[in-house]
Image (tube, rainbow over all chains, first blue to last red; front, side, top):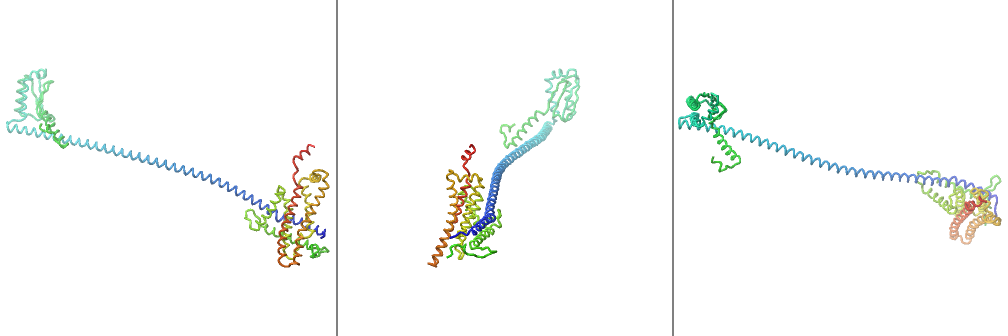
Length: 258
Length: 232
């Protein structure tokens, strides 16, 4: 066992060289690589953490938007339902109003038609009645209706002669108005009656197609009428009653007698 | 029987004799540096490490961890020194199993050289860490009476390191050689396996002791002591 000092010096040199070589080719690359990788891992983890944070933020935002959208959707559906219900009610009300208006118009039209028909019927009835009366008088008594009325006027004027004379005052003219022109004998008969009851009064005859059949005598401010108006009015009332009964579908027993 | 490779002259160049210790040391050095270069030539942080690089990193991190446990700090320079000691001794001892290869650590010259390196490294690291004054002051602590003992202790450390490593490695080689003559089969293999274990342990002990010596020299001064000195 001996120490070779030359070898010792050589080994010291070798060892120092080895330290330098390993430092250059082993420790530094390995440790630097580890440090760099740790830094890289730390950087990537930081990036991953950042990305995760962003993802969580985005997720929260997404959930919020989804919630908002669902809420908006519900609100829109509710609004659409309300609007459709309002529109339906509006359309129904409009249709109902239109229907009622048409119904009213139809009733008015019916009423007008009924009145028109009643009026025509009344006129036809009156004319028929008068014609029948005339025919009956002519056939049975050989007399016209106007002549009979004139004769009746003579009887009726007698009680009110004084009142007519007072009403005539200064007037010297009396006017007898008829629907149709009176026959000569009837005019003569009436003139004789007037001259007898109201002396000094000149009688003039006029016709008025609008006037009812009969005779209207005006003296000054007084007017005396003998027309078939009251009869025709009674006839009209009876006719209207019968028509109304026909429309309603039944006839009142009491009123049907006349 | 050849007990030391110092006596084996491998070649002579320009009058200088290169013995087996030096040549085998170069072989060990070439292996260490070659493997390191091969593995660390393409290191990039963004490329995942392969299995060789992982193995090398594990070794380096292991050494670093052990040194940090002893020194309580991660001084890289200590690691370069102690780590190289460990790797060199470990690989040399491992190569004991190669027939015909004499480990450089079985030479007392090599172990003495390594012990001298540690002996020189302790003041160098100590001075580099705390300055000359602080390093020299460690010799008169805790009292100036301890100065000769501290100096003797400093040198005896190196001698003990050298003898311990040499004795262990050489004894392994000697035992293997003796057993080879007595029982040529089986026993030398068992002893070689045992030699591998003791060789690794010796490498670990040598490196750890070197680290301990260096760390004791580079230990941070006590702040309370520094304050007292400032006041005085």
